[in-house]
Length: 411
Image (cartoon, rainbow, N blue to C red; front, side, top):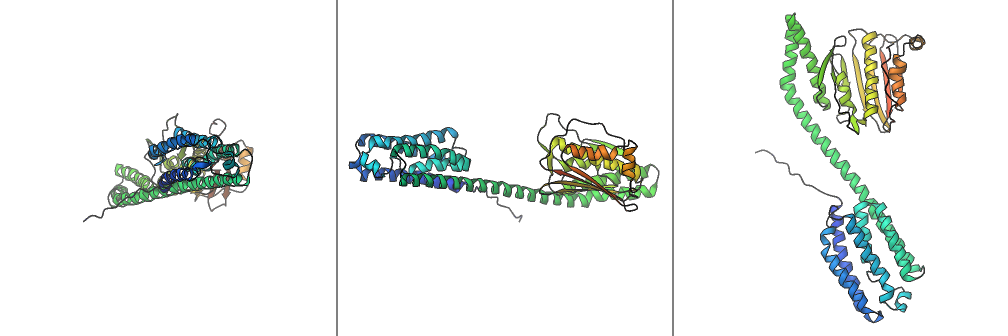
């Protein structure tokens, strides 16, 4: 019998909405009870009764509005706060002066806090602070002058609502992080399952075609070589989860399958850097990176990809046809680091400065210039006989490159 997984949808803030619903009903009953026990302290009790009728009808009729964030609209919040403020400002007209001076509660009493808390749960601590301000002003107007108990109540509402609003924001951020982690976990499991299936079938067939083609020679050898390239590209796809690409062209010297990714010109927002670098992977170029997308602003990602391409062009030109290259992508807290390393003969000391003096600006412009334009850095480390390593660092908050430049001649 197959095992079934039960998925339970949970919301961190939903219990707060349920608590707010109960709070509004209980505080409405409490406010009416306070009025009933102090009926003689009201100069115009009919005005208080009229307000409580409106308050009772509004509270009960709008219970569905405080059931969740979607139902609690801005228009409702404004009307709810207006009813609370109206009750506070009507208190001096309904109650006696002695009750006001002695610090008696306003007509809505602590029901007012429910209106402010609705703002806090809906929009966070900023909305809570915004709603608390007119409540504080109305309380001061109702009392006529700042009093100790009035200031105490105002500060209490401010602190409580802003604190709850902040907790709600943290809870929402944690919920989004958890959802993203679960999504990544599910995608990883699915990718691993597909990788096992592909390894047991397609990859083994491609590897067999490569071996048999190389042994037979002739046109079969060319078919075997192409099968080997597709095997490497497919391994990269299933290991990194990169999206398929559109066009295929061959880089014969490095034995790579270079794919051009066509992007809509009008598309905005960040792009996955790994999907742009995937076309460079091939038989002699290995791409490694996180198992999740590495987002980067689109223009900056293009420049960084072009710089990687320039580094690989240098490998092709100067390291020889048999050289291998490795691209490593690291998503760090403060930025993205892409390292391009090869096993070629390395660069003789002083050669880069000499090439720049001769007007050969491949490293200076195609690599360092591109990184400089987007606020990044490029460092070339090379030891003769031990290959070359190009380290490209880009901050996550990158700036847009200034225009486009043609590709300079390589070193």
